[in-house]
Length: 329
Ligand code: PMV
Image 1 (cartoon, rainbow, N blue to C red):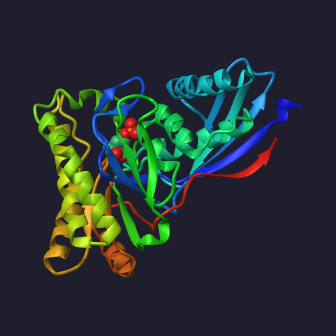
Image 2: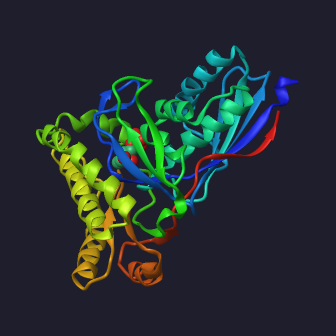
């Protein structure tokens, strides 16, 4: 009975070291430049997909509550491609939960669409290889393509659907880095990354950022392979600052930072001046990701907790690939 097909997948969010900000093709999420990220082991999205013959549309429950109309529609459009590929017409019930604050600068859309991709491929009985899974996840949310493989991942920008995918270039145990996420305000962000990507080209600085993007990819890739923390710190902070420069010079300008975000950044700079190996990066939110080698993470997290405006510090090592945790096919 296909109506009882169900599968549950787990996927980790990722933190980008070299950012994706702006699309060459908006509908296919073909990015304007390649990006590099690390998966986060301790935080995840778990998504159960159940095929149901009685449904007339997909039904998404997010963290225990019915999702907004726009999220329902986004997921339904995304699942249409699985129906098209499999020839099956059934809709799905989807139960998705995050063990971390949704939309607070931790990429819940990345882990969300990666988990959904895996579970949906399973229930629609599609035999899809990992590179193709990453291409499909990309259509849900660009950065979701990087949450399909494990460890340290590069998303090759490409120029069309086939050439734009993410691949791991070092496994999770390659380097014991820890992301100490200083969560600042867990309110849903006001401007989605979808809208942010759209605005990127309105910044007069975006073309300069893109011209130099490949050299930062090279530097970051080599620094990770060589475990060269000083070079990695330098290139990640530069790339983060360039993305923030695009955000604040877009029209209209986008300010994701809060005063507490800057307080965390200054603390990181002070630590580094005092010889501690640590760097910062941010995504499209106020939270700050503070990265360090594992032996320093306890000390760093306990100080981060004392900074006014930091609500919580989430700790995470390097995570593996998205995977199926339960199936009933
Ligand atoms: O995948 P999206 O559309 O949520 O975009 C992610 C954008 C950033 O998180 C800011 C950068 C990145 O590369 O993850």
